[in-house]
Every structure is written in C-alpha cells, then in structure tokens.
Image (cartoon, rainbow, N blue to C red):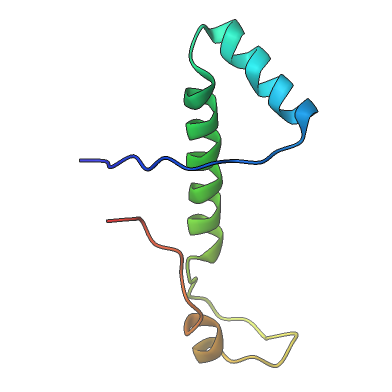
Length: 77
C-alpha cells in the first residue's frame, strides 16, 4: 500500500500556472499533477543513480568500487 505524505511546495508562479492549466485541462486536482511530477522526478533519480556494471576506463580516476559504494536512491518502503 502506498502511503501519501502531505508537504508544502514553493515554486515560481509561472510554473504553477502551467500546472494549474494542465490540471484544469485534464479536469483533475492540482495535487494530482504535482504528485505525478514528484513521482516522475523520483523515478528519474532512482534510474540515474542505479549502479551499472561494465568494462570501461575511468576518466576521473575512480574505481568501480568507489562508484558502486555511493548511495543509491531507493524505492520508499
């Protein structure tokens, strides 16, 4: 079961107006549009931070162990 947490978001007025217009167009609450945006960003972060295994040469001198030791964003429990 997914738990929803309420929070306050600060954003530029023009960005919020765009999202409000989309909510009106789709006839859904603004909260739905904001929730979708948060979920999309979280998925992007989880995907980007997932360790990848491969054979390559590092351009910054880090080893594979260094890279894979970095924290990975995980799905919330």
